[in-house]
Amino acid sequence: MHKHETHLSKLGNVFRRMGKNYSPQEEHRLAGHLGALAAFGAYTAAWGTAIGMRKAELPGAHRPTDVVVTAAAVFRLGRLLSKGSVTSPLRAPFTRYEKTTGPAEVQESPRGGPIRSTVGELVTCPFCLSVWLTTAFTGAHLLWPKATRAVTGGLAALALADTMQLGYDSLTQKNAE
Image (cartoon, rainbow, N blue to C red; front, side, top):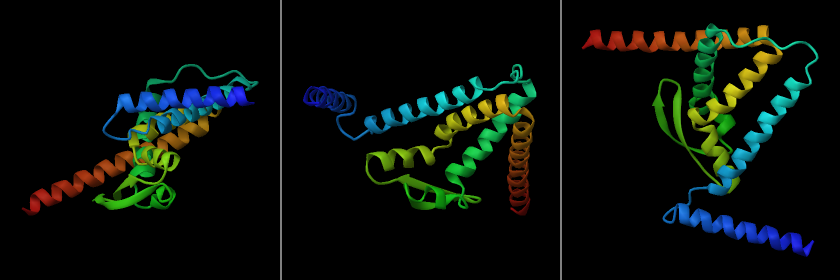
């Protein structure tokens, strides 16, 4: 056990030095990002295992329309989860409110220790969430293609409706000037 602890402490020291060399002026959360990468690896492996255990034949490649609809769904759900004012209670344990930034959206910053702040960084970043959401929708499409098309179709319709709302608001404001 003592030998194992020594190896772990040496590895920890190497990682800390690497972090200081990588970003000497500020804490860049390399350890937290490494943890997030490990969590994403486990998440992806879980999807792979679930898909691999499926007895029925898997559907073929995504249709081009599936790719477009899924992209719109990932965009909309990513914005809703990472920026939506209504979803702020989900992010609150990991973030601090800063200000309102747009229609039904807020800006928040990560807070807390290394793990909490890394989660805060992930849940306030629509680009970061899109990787996780794309993995989920891709796995779900392989396991439950009809249900996934229904969900992604609904989210894509919401993305289009939001775009229309913003366009309408922009036009009415422009005409009022």
